[in-house]
Picture (cartoon, helix red, strand yellow):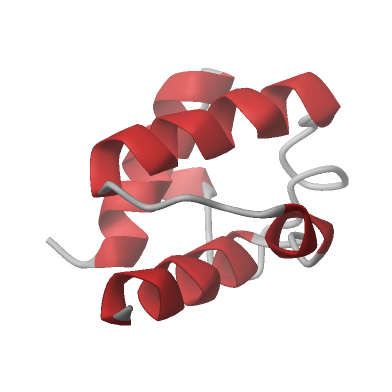
Length: 78
């Protein structure tokens, strides 16, 4: 399973959405109706699942699902 698919599954679970409705271009706020608390919860879930840590600058860059996947990939590379 790719990082995108794993992240998409987490987002679907956390936001009670159908995973097939989530694309890399999906905006957390406009498309997925997530608020700041949803995003914080999601970030913690991603940190736990993948063993990475996000900083404030990372969260400021998060607009789309693809942004999250890209940041995660960078973190996983070390």
